[in-house]
Image (tube, rainbow, N blue to C red; front, side):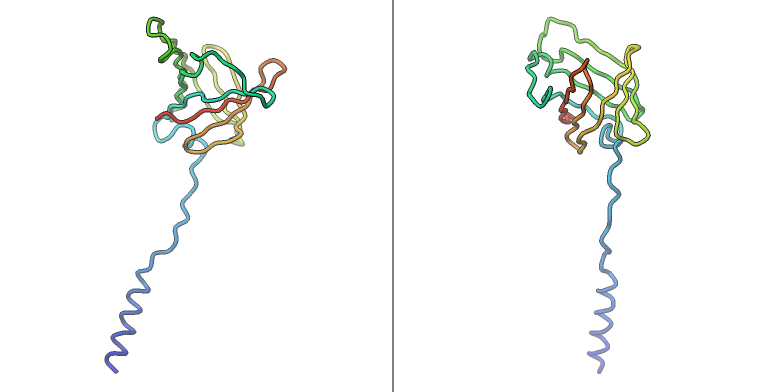
Length: 142
């Protein structure tokens, strides 16, 4: 009888130690875009009307940095031309109330980009350039 009680006690102890499945809170769009302090993105593809748009090689070495404090930075010519100065644009960014549009204010100009896809490592946005719908794919750099 003691063995039964002992086994029952062990069963209770081990079953009570079982961890509940955790349901982690999904990352917010702000966290996916800017990380915990900042996140650097590089342009990997540009399409217009579903067709890949040919851009100058130097366009693809530009980087965009979204900071958690809502500061936006874009650095052009990071690798393409060692002799040419790197251009730095700064401004602010925020998300629309519904978290589906990134608004950027830089050097007195305002831009809006609709989020089409957002993961930890990929950001796809669209915007109008004149009458053309442009889609830009960014990949996480750091």
